[in-house]
Length: 361
Image 1 (cartoon, rainbow, N blue to C red):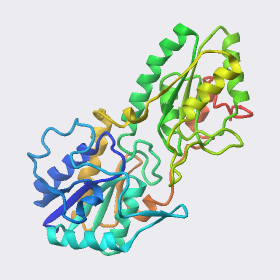
Image 2 (image 1 turned 45 degrees about the vertical axis):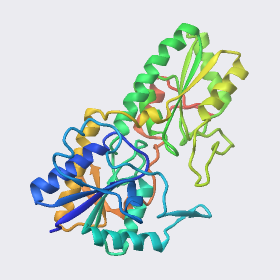
Image 3 (image 1 turned 120 degrees about the vertical axis):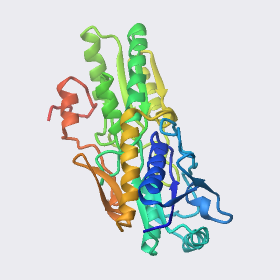
């Protein structure tokens, strides 16, 4: 049994991180008599002069509904470098971190993050340090778990935004474009588009053409609907083209919504506006589901460590919380099945994906 464990959060923030931290601390202290140390600013907090805080049940009191993370987080750091588009893990930062963990008396780590953060966590496991991962991403694109906390809250926010844009679009006979996050997957766009009554949904998994998009707009015009609502995933791809605005790691930075809005206005003459939700989707208080899922993940992570399971990630599968190897958790991303139930349902109710040959599957 471990006497003292550490916990850190990495990558972008997501609603529900504090719910996980709270559950880890309460379970570790109350159920297993472990002490908890919070590592600030992700893995960077255990380099140089470590930045840590003692986590007690009092320290985590009241943080369940709070957004963000009380530990701070980082999207980038010293532990991974991109070389020719592939991640490389330098030895020195990990060696220094392991030495500092030993000095701090931290015997095991619980790491909250997405595929990048969990890939770093796996390097600690490979070097023999006990670690358990907790999946975190609003994009819901980790293949080893059915859901990640933060996703449901992001959908709620995007759906509310679409509801509000709907009234403006109808009042002004406009084409309103809502750009949402998701990087290389369309989960947020698809769920929010269905829940918010979008007319067109553009996702990375189904390349779109402006011919098909304009055909849908014109069909609505002829049917008496002078407005159109379009949800665009930030990673959406036009047929025959690559994603726009990639950074040095190949990550989509946004801009597709503005591009679609501008092109629609040029091609139709209709007034078009674009709203980019951006970080509004990942900020603020988590909804009830994400609080519940985060709490389940945190408690399960501690129990897994107590049972001697390391090098694994907690995951939701078939309604139960289980664990999977970290190597499997980071292996590939989960994309929207183009023949799946959600896509079929969207097409059944008249939503277009603006594919070159839009058909019901």
